Amino acid sequence: MSAADRAFARIRRRRRRAAPARGRVTATDVRMMDRAIELARAAGDAGEVPIAAVVYRSDEILGEAANNRERSADPTGHAEIVAMRLAGERLGQWRLVDCSLAVTLEPCAMCAGAIVNARVARLVYGARDPKAGACETLYAIPTDRRLNHRVEMHGGVREAACARLLREFFRARRGRRG
Ligand SMILES: [Zn+2]
Image 1 (tube, rainbow, N blue to C red):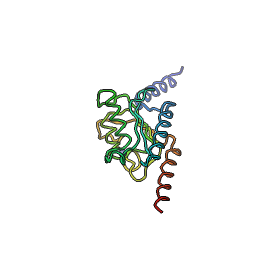
Image 2: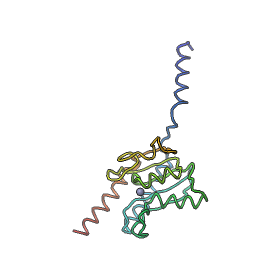
Image 3: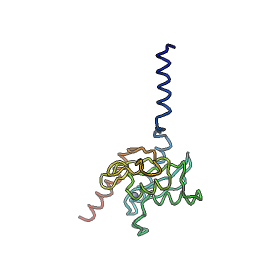
Image 4: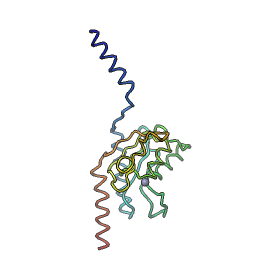
C-alpha cells in the first residue's frame, strides 16, 4: 500500500467515524408497517380516520393502536400517542429507549413532539401529510437539532398503500354526504 493509499484509508476511516449512524429500513420495519396498515383499515371500517401506529423493539410489539378520536372523544387520541402510552405501560417507564415507531401517516406536531419527548429511537412512516406533517413537510421536529433528542427517521415506507387507505376513506365519506 502506497503512502497515498494509506492516507486515503485514514480519511475514509475518519469519515466513517464522524458520520452519524445512518440507519436503514429493515424487513421488521416493513412488517410493522403492514401491521399498522391492517389496524388502520379496521379503524376506517369503524368510522375513524384510518391511521395506525406500532411501537416495537427488535421484533417485539410493545404497543399498537389506531386513531380513536371519534370513539374516545379525545383530541389527543392519535394512533402514535395511544400506541406510545401502551408501550410505556408495558415497559413500566416513559422512556421508549431503543424503540421504533411505525405509523401510516407522517406525524403531526403533537405526535412528533411526543415522539421526541418519549426518546423514541427511530420513526418509520408511510404517507406524507401536506396538511399537518411535522416531520419533514411543514416542520422537522424529530430531527430539529435545537431539541434535546433526535429521532432517526424514514418516510415513505409503503407510502402508496397508506395514502390509498386515506384517499378511499375520505372519498367514501364525501360520497355518503353527497
Ligand atoms: Zn398526531
